[in-house]
Length: 336
Image (cartoon, rainbow, N blue to C red; front, top):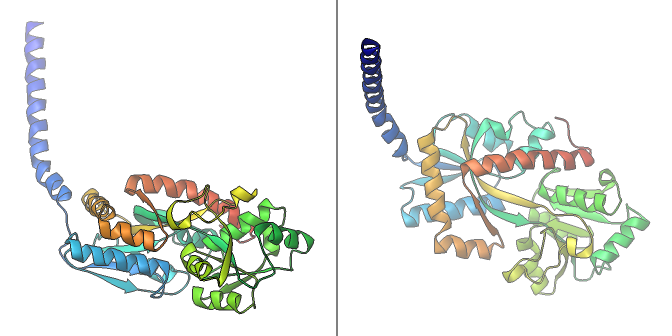
């Protein structure tokens, strides 16, 4: 027994020594991963043309990267086309490379569900969600539609009597809120008289010109016009009234309609990013969202701060994917 005890002790000591050697050997790799940072210019890929919300966010982030020194060198690269699929396909070429990040939104989920692309959110590395943006229904000031109650009454009398304008693609967040609204008031979302425009500008022009009845868009598109007396906002898709400049806007829920949804905006990397690269972007965006410049600009854009790190973002995407799938099925758009 004494000999067995000595042997066991010797074996245990040897295993411990070997474990220490293994840990020491791996330490440089761990340290290297934790200390990863870009060694060449970072490309911030935007899958749409300059001027839209994704581009605005990307350029704001790039400006703060430079002014704060968070990232030594970066550039915004616009790759418009195919409801963002061109830009995301471009990002997908750089597997395992933390020097490439891209803006994204629920459109990434919808595109896959609708069969527009084979790329899914699981094909990328979600890095964060930075902000959320609600959807509003608005009409021109001269519109005979005076309230959400009035709009509902008109639709229930004749579902084709009211037209809706939004940008930039079927199945996006604007279309989702429209579908939720119609389903909540007992109208088949598939019969909506929806007109899709290539950009927010043409859609707004059509509504202000009286060619389309209701504009489905972001608060930043309509609130300034309401303040000028040129438009009237009927409802917003938040769960409750929001503070600040949005405080004057009544929600769908306030008015008995179950249409709560927001488009989230953030950044993702290509598939295969290592822990060190994800850690760098977690820390970098954490510091960015704490900056006064970021806080001022999010308020200016009527965005709501909603910062999630990479791990939390992946869980959010899993839940959101099922929600979006259900709504797109109601709209008759789901194919996957």
